[in-house]
Amino acid sequence: MKAETSLLFSPSRIIPLIKPFAKCNSRVHGVAHWARVYRFGMLLADALGLSEKERLVVALFAWTHDLARNDDLHGREHAKEGADYIRQISCQLFENFPEDILDITSIAIKYHSHGLNVEEFLHEFPLEKSAAWPRASLLNVWGCCWDADRLDLLRLNIFPDDSRMSTLYWKDILPLAAKLNKKTDMLDKPNLDEQDDENSWFV
Ligand SMILES: [Fe+2]
Ligand SMILES: [Fe+2]
Image (cartoon, rainbow, N blue to C red):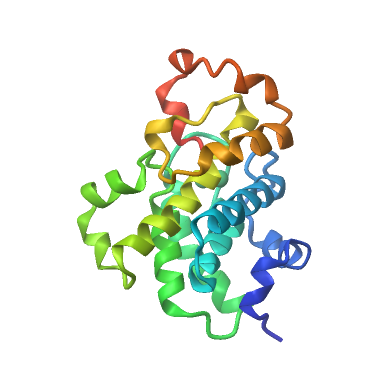
């Protein structure tokens, strides 16, 4: 029997269903990372007052954006593959997953490793504006997805780069991200100058 989409909001029920689709067993980009991205994403969604449909995109992104990774190396291949992979997954797991939500989540996954904030992304890839939702809604949902993922860069000793973040609220979630990753010391000394620019897309 196929699942209801509401399961995406229940970590303990969705994780066992999603985990078998992961192409590698990653410690850095695995279940614990997805769960933190989900948690940060939902907090950002609360702050922005996202609708139920918009929250579905953020939840689906959190659980699936790194499933196509074959390893923990740098690179965007998993993002490109992951954008198609969620269609297979949603077909197998869910009954009639709404097509617009799949489209918008697929774009969020495809470009999540480009290191762009959403404004920059819409400027560089204007064709993606043809996604079915209004621009304001896309800014919010893609911003929640990417900021939630980038907040978890702290686990790798990387401080999120303000210029690559999209929402106004990511700094409010930063203390929680630092606490969950045991990196509260990083909040005082971000050391952004010493960070390798390549790292900012290691998500
Ligand atoms: Fe990723
Ligand atoms: Fe990620």
